[in-house]
Image (cartoon, rainbow, N blue to C red; front, side, top):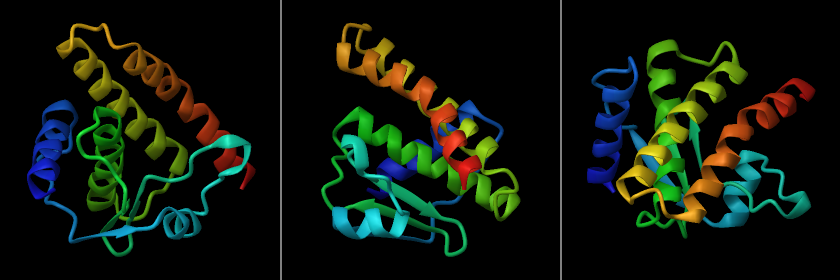
Length: 147
């Protein structure tokens, strides 16, 4: 996992203005129920719940115990949380959660587009996931504003 985190942090540094980001201090694995509770995940309406989250105050990356590092989708989720880590290191607590999410989703979508291109663009699952990620910032920002 250390090697994957290092590689994703290098990608973030090459794809954004977050340069030389150190790895999170801690990470932990939790059961799906534990991480959903900790993340206050909305599992209604068939949503699968949280796979990962980042806690800025403790610089802790939290992953679901069944996280599959071999899947590009789940690596993109890890990348999304590492963007939050970079944001936290630069700015401390997020002043604007919506802006932080938009930036993390934009980099996640770019990562997925690059992965799809590397695979010849023929993977329908990746195309579908990119379409979901393109819409997710609006949904998340609506939820954040609703409080």
